[in-house]
Amino acid sequence: MKKKTILIIVICVLAVLIIGGLVYYFGFYRNQNNEGGTGTSGEQENSKLSAVYDEFKKDDVYTLTRTVDEDNKITIARSGDKGYKESIINGRDTKYIVNDGNTYLLQEDTKRYYQYDNNVMILSEITGVLEELKDQEYEKGKEKINGKNYQYEEYSGCQDFLVNNKLYTNNESNSKTRFYYDGDKLVYIKTIIGDQEEIAEVNIQYSVDDNLFNVPTDYVNAEG
View 1 (cartoon, rainbow, N blue to C red):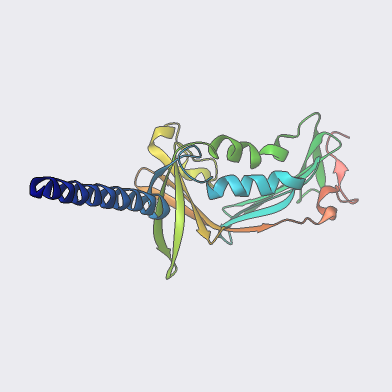
View 2 (cartoon, helix red, strand yellow; view 1 turned 30 degrees about the vertical axis):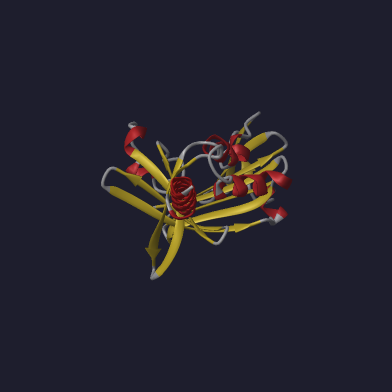
């Protein structure tokens, strides 16, 4: 009887130890997924980037501006089948309009425009890249920018969000992009290529100025 009692006690102790170990392990694993480590949409909750993509695609109405500095900034706006892109690179301003299935390049100094028929690539310039990335593996982490800590999701082999292409390389394996969030709001994008990097402040509005999609009336067709 005494031996049977001891055996029962030993079994109970082992059961408690095993259950405690399992609780600790899974608690630690969950904490790793929440605060850092590798994740994919199949292994954990959908990425924040996936939520950004879904919001863009919900109505296809948005204005996204990425600003490195006053001389390097890109704005892309879309409303359905209409689009607008303004690139300021090294202080030089270039504007494109997508309307009626065509793209128009505006030449501000001569008040002329060039028409490219059946070209709407600007419409998917942002969402096309996000669609490719949103289901890929990514690394999670935290980083301080301008004195504030942000969570980020890092994707390898991506340099599509560069503003100034001076860092561009044909070797994508040497590049990665970090998307920084304040809560669920995308606030910065950093492109890292080798030992160089570019960080752009992000502003997203789910609205557009419809006037952006019209070629100014004082512009003339460059091809006469």
